[in-house]
Image (cartoon, rainbow, N blue to C red; front, side):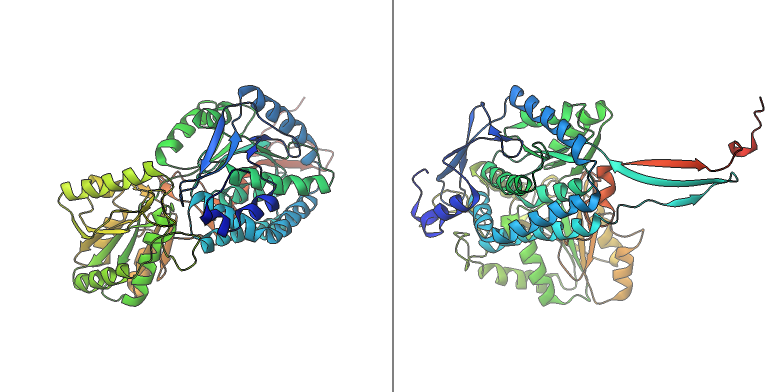
Length: 520
């Protein structure tokens, strides 16, 4: 293993590598137990201390072709297993995750930069979706319908789709993959996953875990596959006509490119893209609850959640009160090494993200906004990477171009509204993104207006809780430039399957629909 920093050593990274089967240099392409890869080396740097964690080989076109052929062969077998049997494999995967929750959570924390508690929480999401998928494996049901023709019966059924391509982002380097694979596997699909090139070791670790489970059950190679690399490797998935569904998580810009490529070949895409999430704070809001929800929503994961709170839309009658409470709360934030459980805010993913954060603050000032909690980049013992920034608050207007965009950083924009809740809803909806939204109010009329057809236009609308976070069981996703996809709960499983309508004639006659006569 590479020589590691004192921070990593104190965090027990050597033990993490041992538990997860990681090496100094890892093959970045895998069909399960078979690991290979002959492409260029991807080096993983920790945003915590800037040190090299490990290396992963990228996937070449030849490597990719081997993966796809193996996956296709595996699908022919996997789809024939009864769904509850597939669910049993997912159950075992969930048990293995329980055993390895601590080391995998530590890896997520160190490679991505989120707090250790958030790293553990992300692994818990993986466990939860496995539990959900196990139950789902016995509920992949369609409808039975009455036919207009006598002696006929109609019903619908859902069949496995095929090879599912998954492109995930750095901010949730393990959970988003699990959301997709756990459902896809019980549906009878096999998966090919391209993790973010910024968190490749998390991808290798997850593949090692599921590969062990598949081996123990004497299942073939290709049910879970891994590829690594930059956007050119992602394009291999998008362009491949053998992949009926590509699930992509990332920026709206990336999602549009994926959608265009997949759509050109009439494939299906499941898109989970950017958010520009707002909390409406009405005169009837609980201020203490508002501050807690807004602060965590804005600074959790250093503002790098697609559900992070970007805008706070506050009624003018309580604006100053809320502003003062927020500024006071921000003074209490502890910023530093995310491996230290006493810290509230860890680093951004890399120095490029820091540059975008700094540019956004300058842009909002130039537009006429007022920064009331100053930002800046921090350095010091244990945070030598240059990726630790101070969460900032700026007073702004909703129409500012920088407010209309998603800045993947802990910058919170305070917006003022007057009038009734409908004026606030108009501001909330007045952006291109439509992922998560929330309202803080004790007024039932305001809450119901926010949840009505004329209310929030987002895929997620919360009352008296913040915007960040997703609960397994509910369908996760958003509208407009967020992409329209849904993952995780409810009937999101249907996107991973193909629907078939069947009509059965159990008579000796052949009546035609709509009473048509065709006698021979």
